[in-house]
Image 1: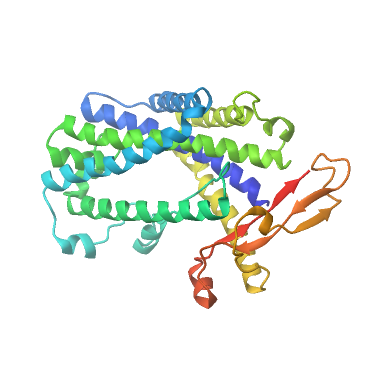
Image 2: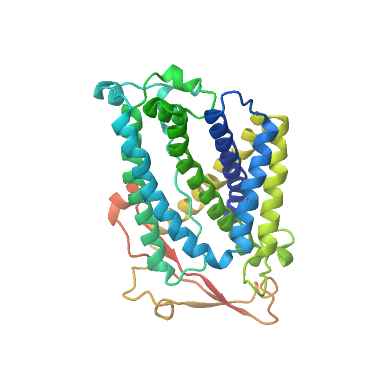
Length: 365
């Protein structure tokens, strides 16, 4: 199966699952502050729709402010880290280092503890469009994101493990999310725990806004290359705002339809959205395998001294794609597979899979 199609399918499920997570997080906040609240599945679905509505408004009406909003999200992300970490570490009772680093608990129903540990090592996903000098800026963005979030995530993980408390007690929380119970145990206050959890919920909603932008543009990009049904419509860009409005609408409709499954069964919904992992990792595997093959057979050129597009173009005339690309004659396909600025050489690079190849494929119609 085409990795592009798998990636598009995966991103559609990411949108639905991200909005569902936000909806249930909001339900957890309500349960945290109101012990008499009885959560219902349809409550989560309605909250999912509300989150999707906010994401649609930002991606359409406020689309011009999206880059500035994402910068603001980064600031909230970093400041929110300290706003949660400091009261958690200061106010919560602490466990001992032995229980944190030597005790492993498998309560997810996995056959082995090792498998349970590995399941949590999900990778990052990225969608990069509309970026200048992508050969340099995209690898920098990925590495910066991994380094920043890796440091913050590891620090928060260690802090939470030291402040974990009674595992059985936090697992039975009425909020549905153990981290909220950890916050409540640390602050001894539902209001304080709600304030800390609100930061997490806010960031989750902001992430859903970004995911909708990515998934709709992924759909639009693949439709532009005639890779999807009804590509003629999905590949359109709204002339005034220059956004893929049709792709956004289709993505929203798919998320809403998927959310209806949750009303009947949360298990069925979770099973379906688990296709996210299968689809995305399937697309990653195909691309990574092909890049590994090209690396081993020496087809990837050395990194050029300049990353200007004109310095690394290699034109190949392909008459077979003229009808697919909408041209009457031939279409020039500019293809050049070169190493990006970040590369681990030799066998070590193959083992670590730490290389980044820059596929400079552009189409000139």
